[in-house]
Image (cartoon, rainbow, N blue to C red):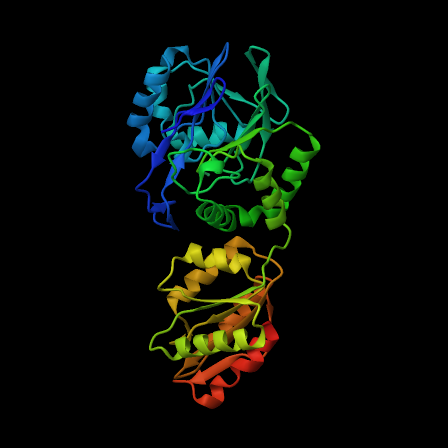
Length: 394
Ligand code: FEO
């Protein structure tokens, strides 16, 4: 593992090559991940963030190879979530008096998680500074709701490194550490997935914070997030991309999302996709079955889409539980400025489409007409409605 970040700053995190799930079982991880932590050895020795609890022993043992733990002057916790703070208890058992600098909200979240109110917490806010010697200092920037109330970033003068924690991260394991050495296609796909699923609910705060950071005119040579690669080649490209994604982002894409019991609703989904392509050949059309794809991968495609078509058969007098759960997650992400259409089969009372429509409408989607509602398997007459639905979406 390459460890030198710049001058006296090195990477001391954990590469989670085997990670498949994150946030319990909730989030799918396709290319592993990292928990990045950083060690600064100026006149003062500073540790920024730690690793997830299951790796705490290895993290602390590896850290001992880099530095005498007792020589660590300050620990900076940019965020209290356990993937970055989980090694604190094992570390603090060895150096219990080391001061921890974090936001006021992180004091609360760290005590809430680890029950050590006696740790030497120092709450900091935007503009607070810590002198680390050799003419360099750390400046703290509060980042509330990006993505927790306790989140902050730390800027290091002299080397011009922004330790941004979760912001600008990706779940992407890579031994080479830096963005210029990454597989660009994987890097951008994972950066977008991370953004769409983790940061999208907080877009208004994100936009304001990016404007605030830009207005400070700080020279930024490196952005060092807490997951995935470090941005050293044109580091502002990820900031610019975040800003673009925060502005009612969509591509010329339409995604058909559905689940199906006995394939009737699947037949409609496929016909809608064909008609979308016929109505707008330049539009990227994707079809995703909720029970076959990871919900966060579907959300990444929905985030990229200007419109979606959502289908479920009616079951009893509701919709499929898989679709209900997916819609609950969609609501959480607060995507804006997208059209939607609904479709589904029924055999009894047929409330499915109305439930889909009401749900999407309540989230702010512009739900178009017509919908497609089929009594059991769709006839050609029913399927022919897909042309008008596709034209309304495209
Ligand atoms: Fe990577 Fe919010 O923790």
